[in-house]
Length: 159
Image 1 (cartoon, rainbow, N blue to C red):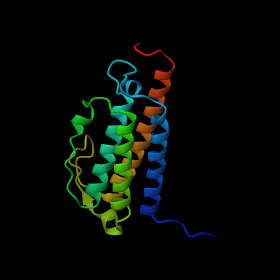
Image 2: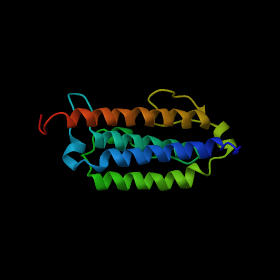
Image 3: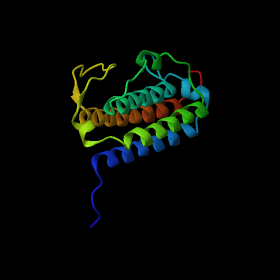
């Protein structure tokens, strides 16, 4: 029977799967589709990807004991990015995941950290909390992206 992977190895592997799914979802879309809003007070696919990756980056940094300069509000006001720009962002986050994610120690998992841009959970929480919360957040936004894509593909451009 194979030995089970450790928490950090599993976390990194699961996030790689999310990144692969993001690549797949945006690969067939152009900049216009990535920037289109499915309705009032909604977010574009481009915004969802930028936000998801910004959140992931911040969590990797804080759990590793590094500072984060994330500007969360800017993730929701940025111009639509092209598929190539989004793919470069995913690749950069892949590198960060490999660099920081694989270095997370048991001590990092147990150490309470404050997340500067937290909307909720504004008190220090252990690293394991932030990683699990981040993974759930990413899966939620991946589903959000997939639903947005379905809605956009069901109706003609410009509506």
